[in-house]
Image 1 (tube, rainbow, N blue to C red):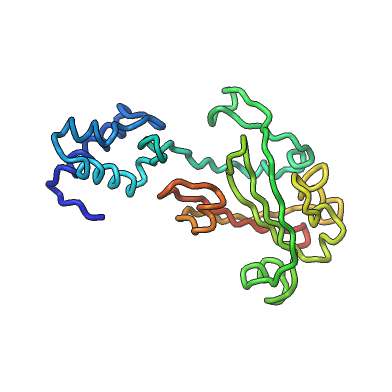
Image 2: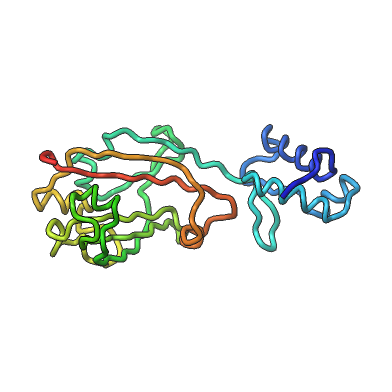
Length: 234
């Protein structure tokens, strides 16, 4: 959507953008309604609506049907250190969440839920290279959707060589974590203790399926992490 540089809609958008940048309109705060903006700037409602659409396109605001427009809340990416994969961490099942990035802010045990969909699929090039199998070989795909307070937070999809996971909780489609200690514990019990983990992380716009699955507002990006876990002998 193009708005003329000197148009009233652009001026309204600029004022609202400045209010967001300075905190006069805080994260999660409700923006003035189209009617209020039209009255304030002595413009038509169509012009005021164009200003809000521009801010929505920029990813600064989200709209809620029947409620109005709100300043998008920011969720910063915090890259955790490799210690999060240490054995003493994945051997237990309790997950702690903090009110901020400062541990001293206090923590609470995370209350969440995950669904699981397990199936045999043909390995694509990326999966085949990671698992050291031929393209098209059968591998187990374990897809999960994590929710908290009934709100989707993220998805996870893991791929395994059948011989490594047959008969283990990793191929059990029951909701929840695999077994008592999660996937790493299951692999360790099979003599496949995780030793080396390589990750690639990047942000992108979601696919249409991801937008529906995660109930994302318009313009919301996602962060994708690709992880390959290997044993000590590779």
